[in-house]
Length: 68
Image (tube, rainbow, N blue to C red; front, side, top):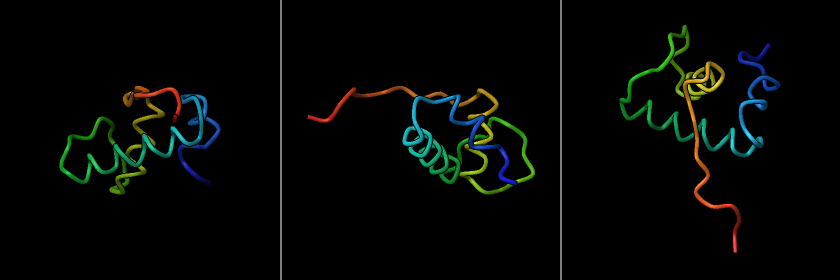
């Protein structure tokens, strides 16, 4: 079983694409040495990013609304 579940994560963001981009960006930040926002048994940066998102510690902001 995937933990945290995809269903609970999708409720935190507006689309699955936003979820992927936010997790990848936060994962790169964690690799660069940024502080963890949640305690976890995992050392994988993307897993940590997803756990932070589910815990409500990770937020995102849309830079643009569309591509033109």
